[in-house]
Image 1: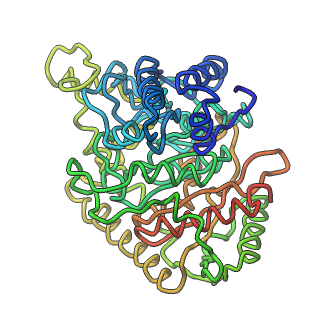
Image 2 (image 1 turned 180 degrees about the vertical axis):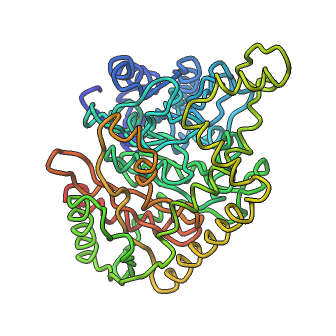
Length: 481
């Protein structure tokens, strides 16, 4: 079994149905892999073997009774550690929640297990999902399995590394500004950010509530589609989840793409991009042309304001959301001589440097006299960025861009330069601000063997079109351009 490093969902289903192995045996195989590789990768923070084997046994019992197996029966998955799991430690990569054990599951986790998936454990991440390299976890950085001296990307770096290393068949990550797509690009896997509201945020520990989204990472587009089909849909526990009819994305992704109009925005191919990234992404656009897609030149004039807008909106919301971690209701409580002293020591000891930096930036942006100048103005610019996409999708079916301006960089290379680190998300934050879906698919490697990602963006609730283009690109050999 171990010889096949990357199992896919269809292969697992076929193997279970032909009784090649049991779900318990498959689960044991993945825990064996984790035991061997995780000490070096640091992709998992907490494992949940009791829960995993109990779920595997339920799948095996269904098979023994000759019942129809659910869509994700026996599929081993990793869950980013900012998503609540009942009875399993959920730290958010932070010391302030080091021993926090949620009393309930996130809706996305509930839906995965209802579909038969096996939850192996919790994947490492930047603290409270704040970072672009996965070096901000209080439990140490994650390493890129394709180049151990380099970052996997962040903040869902543990999820991406687990999938890329074959330690899980798929994973859940989360996004605020590119934290699924950017690590997917740097680790050479698929990362899908759904439309805001497509997947319930219930149980997702909030960073920036108007931006946060849960989405899948996988090794194939079809696996990502299957995972999205399982977790999408209206949830009464999340008032921001959309009452929009979902689709069987797995069934729809094979529809033809010939004739699709793909927008190529000039602002995404400006100076600053690694030459090898440009070369591969342009080759990817050429491949889409051979599939019958029609490139259309676009201009999205407010793109240059995206990074500044994102970091005002996201930090402002983070400063509000993280106020709840005060030593009274959750996690760490430091001793203090007064209540105020306890608050200060708890937050001072519990939060890392990047979280403190963003709380201070956000508090400043929301403070009296500055709200209109920063937060309100940023929200107005956000609306203009969203209008850029609305106008673009009146002309085209999808937009194609690079995912990241560079391949994976070395550990520690940007830790002392926050601005340079923030620019790692320059091609992803616009889609996050606009609330649209987008996917990163591999489109070749650099001369050093580092993966490069191509991004496909679609209109709101246009996940089917995004997956169709990504699947067609994958099937045409886009991964090895």
